Image 1 (cartoon, rainbow, N blue to C red):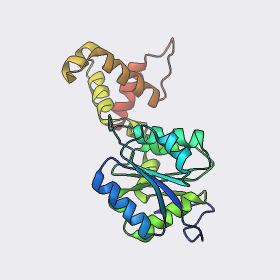
Image 2 (cartoon, rainbow, N blue to C red):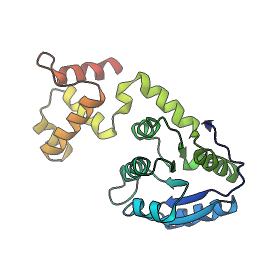
Image 3 (cartoon, rainbow, N blue to C red):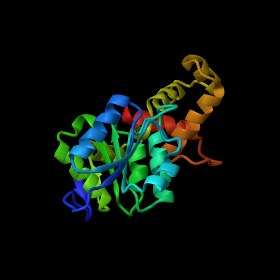
Length: 227
C-alpha cells in the first residue's frame, strides 16, 4: 500500500465510517472488522440511493464503498464518491474494490484536497492495514494500493489502456474497416450503443472533432502502434 498525506491511523478518537457494499456477507464483515479496529460504523448501505441523505444524517468522517454497485454494477460507487466529495468535502472517501478501474481512480485523485483512497479487496492483508488506511483518509491523506499505482503509471504512457474491454472491441472492428452499423451487428447491440462507445474512445484517445483529421483513422493508428 502506498500512502501520502498528513493523516495517520493513530488518532485518539475513533473514526466514524459509513459502509456501502451490496454483498450482505461482505458488508457485515466490513462492519465487524471496522469495529474490531476501533472505528464507529454509523451506517451500512446496500447501494448509493440515499447516500447524500445518509452522510448528512450520520456525519461520517470516511465513506467506504465499492466501485461497482447496484443497479448496473458499473460506476455507481465512484459517482457516489465524487458526489459526496462535492457536497461534503470534509468527508474522506475510501474505495475498496475487486478491480483496478484506472479511469475512476484518476477521477478521485483529481481532487487535490486529499482524503481519498483506493484499495483492492483481495490485497488488504490485515486488519491493521485497513485501520491505517481509514485513519489516513480521515486525516486528509491519500492511500493507494501498489497495483493501482502501477496501473496508473501504465495508463499514463499508453492511452489504449484507459479503454474498456468493449471499447477495445469496437476499436478493433474499426481497424477492420467496419461501419458503426456493421459493428453493431457483430456485437449484437444497437447502433446507438456503438456510437456512444466510439465517442467515448475518441475522447479517451484525445481525438476532438476536427475538420481536417479523420478521427477513425487516427484511432486506428493508435491501435496499430500498440500491435
